[in-house]
Amino acid sequence: MINKNPYIEIPCDKTSCWEGWEDIGTMLKARISEIPKKKIIITIESNLGTHITPNIQALKDAFSPNVTCRARNIFKTPEQISKLTNRKSNGTTSLTNPSFTIEDYFDTQKLDGLRKNIDFIEAGVILIYGIGAYKICEPDILIYSDISRWEQDQRFRRGEIENIGLDNLHDPYRAKSNWFHFVERKICDKIKRSVIHDCDFFLETNNWKKPKIATGDIIRTAYESTYSQPFFNAPFFDPELWDGEKKESNNPDDFSWGFDCNLDRNNVLFKFEDILFESPAINLIFHDPKKILGNNIFRKYGLDFPIRHNFIDTLDSEDLNLYTFPASDRVRDIDEYHQHSECYYVMESGPQSGLSLGLKPGISTEYFKQVALDANTKKLRRELKKLLNRIDMKKHDHLIIPDQTLHDKGIKLMMLAISTTSSIHEIPLFPENEEPIEIHRCMDSVSNLTPSKEELFNCEQSMDFYGISAELLGSSDQSEFELIRFYVDKPLKISGESMISVLNMIDGPEAKITGQFNPFTVHYSETFVIPASVDNFTIEPVNGRVGFLINRSKLG
Image (cartoon, rainbow, N blue to C red; front, side):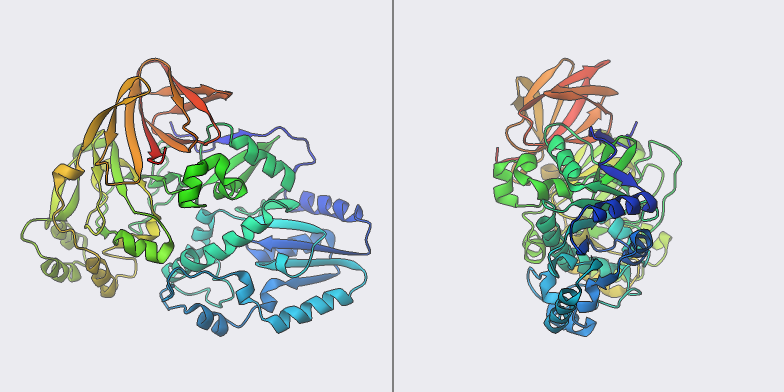
């Protein structure tokens, strides 16, 4: 059973959250009438991808502002922005760790002119909106229009949005997505961190036709409540992330390449009376990082929590692509991440299940590249995989995926992939555009041709875990985190260790997590987060023995 709609219920009244443009407009008109000023400025600071134009039109219809100003109108030209950021056509930059602010995009003359025009207005309602709107002048009502990174990515894929200040709506998806990840994500996050503590309202527009708005106070109350209890991320499912083929299923327990714990991309769901409100999980870190991460992890990793869980489901399908990951030092140069590590844990397996890892002895990268350039059909790609080592895998096997090593996503497997770095760095051998240059790029990142199976496959070490026998999975020098497997048939009390923990239930039908919070129920395959503020928690099996993976930093 997968809980695809997990929410945290937050006590509130009907003056905390509203749904639909009509109710939102009515509420805002009432708020405007309560402000004892002739000139009232409403600012809607917007995250990238929030469909600004239809949102603003709906609000204009609702409360009829006298003047509207769009932040985009004070930006530099697209050519100036591209030159400033050294943007390349594939959505990358030659700058190391590019760090820009939205002010870098502003044309100072246009900004000064707009401010003078606003100062000249003596009365009426002025609506300022868009990315960077809050920097233009001090608002009387500040609304933050938010969206999950997952939905941002989907809108890039569907060709619905362009990059900040660039007229590139029809550019390839990967170029726009890369630029967002490496540059714009940081710009938008700086804005969000500036307004998250003080905005009057949060506008949720993942479904812009059915928007929701909540007061800043109730959302911040919801964040504080979340720090004191276990919680699920609302899972999203990405059937196109690796192979570009949409995978449809009506099976409620189909994992379908789903990310169920990725704090920088998932949402958390809050229930305010009868309204479900989505908030990006990253906001929990931005609001108070120490309460969710813990002091030590925050000091080392800052605002990026480097544990990501996602499901890879090839039980009923076959992924014919191959992948590699660049060296960790290269990743850090580009993206400020720490050491990359990734492993696969098998949750379910079918007959003849396994995956490919590394080239067979005697197969050179040059020969493999030559064969790969001609592998333009499914049959040829299956033949290509015969040049790789095959590892047979079954339920509860685990495998470390080293950097710079060719591998696939397996066959007849449902695996939990646990990584410390965003999948955007992963290089596919056969990308969607099928360009040979991408094959060369992938092969240029391959240096570990024949990794040692003994050091990677089912490598485990016995250990004591709060009085019971457990197993530390993987070599101790392979990751900055400890992945521990343990089984319990009676209640086990676990210390929070003043740091965030991520757990997945790998065996058994159901368990209760209890502590100084309402009892929390988990089922097989579900991943959940224990914030650092939770001092301790107890795992109580329901109807028999249960097994868990717990992932924690070695900082302790």
